[in-house]
Image (cartoon, rainbow, N blue to C red; front, side, top):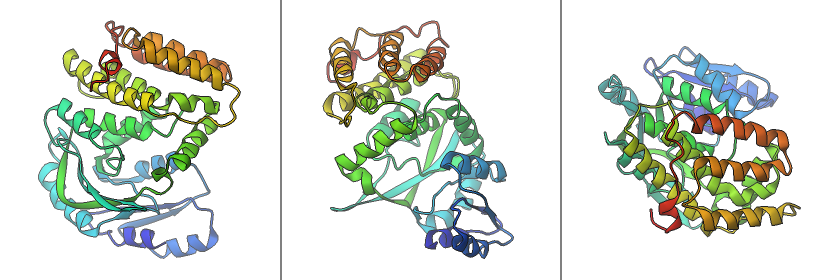
Length: 344
């Protein structure tokens, strides 16, 4: 409730605050309703999934830029107060798609300050490379151009499954759409929580696979999937400006290389899955043959594992990503050559 109260305090003529309470808690609802005023719109709804909650907030928002936070998010008031002036100065530039800043990262061992280099560059390759320089994805918590967010979320809703790494795919698409103004001040504080420790983080990832109707064995492919999906979108998507093919290929190689090294370097658990042997064989095959596989080859291998336990999901995953791959006639170009050599 303290975080909700803080968010309501930002409301003023230049800043619209929308609070959508989907908690289903009667006491919370009574408290939240008290924050309603001319510039703070409080809506109470039945419990629903976060994606629905976010989509409905976006539908109601009137501003050109939005900042979506949850009731466990800690933001810095001065950054929000500065935003109207920043957007007045830069918001009319169509190449600017968002505003970011400094991030405080809280762990059990201490605190650290993070930022993302070069995300304000006119060079899209520099922006993507800057994003890849930091592992904790706090960039997700940026002020964003509403039209872009609506377009990207509409695309994400068409995906056959939604997984825990998709926040990274979303941020990748944002950076491909345009540049970010970087504030020289703290914007957001992120408590790593369960994601700090390997065992609890793996459990959360496996929960996503189960919720998507997949066997925990897919957790072995976690970073390979992230690399594959991101690289396919970089090379072939029409969601962002049509960059020259050489730039697209360079970004796809860097994205895939980093995620392939994660895939190769993490021995990810899969619980008591009876498909453990199948997953291990596939990982070994992908490790040794990377650099000779096309996107289409990788898709076939991924869907072959999915089909062992979820034939319908495997078909939908194949159909979706096959359509993305074949947006360009040249999409058969091999990927992963740099990854196979261990270079980024």
